[in-house]
Length: 596
Image (tube, rainbow, N blue to C red; front, side, top):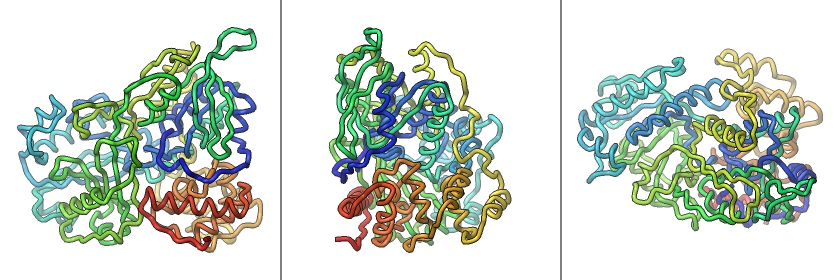
């Protein structure tokens, strides 16, 4: 639920259907607080089991840590050093599974590790494994340790051979494949993981799957963004006068309206804000100890070419794991791993940018980079458990579920708090959390999500030729291959639903970008719970991520959204100003608008 850019935004008097669905029937068996990928995944799973479930998110979906990730779906090779073998096995199984059930967003990613020594780190590795602390000056892991780790990684990935096994290259062959790598390397190891290029849209797909399951089943599934938990009330009485669940106060962040909502089980999936959410419900907890991770996005053709389509994954001289990899025509560089101060905004600092430039020089010494090539920056707080003296890099990435029982003011409600969790394992985590909720409700699981396609991944073409054929078969007068390809990339096979909407009325492409049309923006506003202009720029499209937001775009998108969202001239101006503020404050992007 927690996120950085959800305060100080303009307000609206418009009644949203998502909020109205909760107000009209202010009770559910389960209330999930937090609309990141783990909360949304649990919402979908519970809805598929026929549970009456509601979800609220105080900002936009996937606005917090879920939207500030490294965009990787990976098995976590480094977790082997932490001894987290269960997590590694689950991660590689889930990575392979997501490649199958969400192929529209999750893609294989070839990854190369440049290696500068043969036996470095052999003596210190056992101490790191046993103590989870760095002993003395960090030492880069040499070929021997990396070979051992990748062999174990292959072993954990053996279920079905979704991705190829790793390969080792000597210096000569490695430089032939990646000629701009540091000439001092001795080896390069290459293996496959996966990436998710549209994590925000994947989250929306999961959410909409849950809503559709609820609409088709005997119960209900309702969700609303920009709806926050204010406080916990007392026990709720049912029609027979007995206690049943607990009542919370919810506030519409767009209108300021407050109303009560009652649930039998409350699930806290607010990530790094779990303790603060529990505090709002009248209970003290100290589960969380998140770390901040920052990233930069570069428009840098030279660095893009140097990567040659691969992620470069390596250990810097300070012992931290970092990555450089292409995303479309941009290059993502990350990540840092420092203790987070929850009282401060999570933003990428100048010191972190200097650090990124240093590490790029460590791998590609003849590829100069400068600040004017940065088109976007972002940072988030990982929902890690409290770790006291353990160094951030060694904090467990696994998850656990804390049963809070009856909070001091929670009456009859059971509160389950999620501690930890990562993108790769969200489906398995949601399954685990759903099973715990079902147990509390005395219900049995009806449906497995293990092989269930997610959203626009259903029927998605599995070959380049199939994708090309899909695009050709959906072209029509006025829409070229680029436009159809863009829709398929953004929605997967759900693009067919979008195309039907586009064909139902007069449409035109925007003047400020050929990637959006008037009716597509209307579709987003009516079907994807758009609350603010910034939602479209960052989370319904990748325009901000790629540095493509202009003043003309801000004005044009705001003007189109004003009709379905009921904005008058003052509200449009406020939305434009708020979008500018968020882009500059949290993402290092300055956009000058035509509106004063």
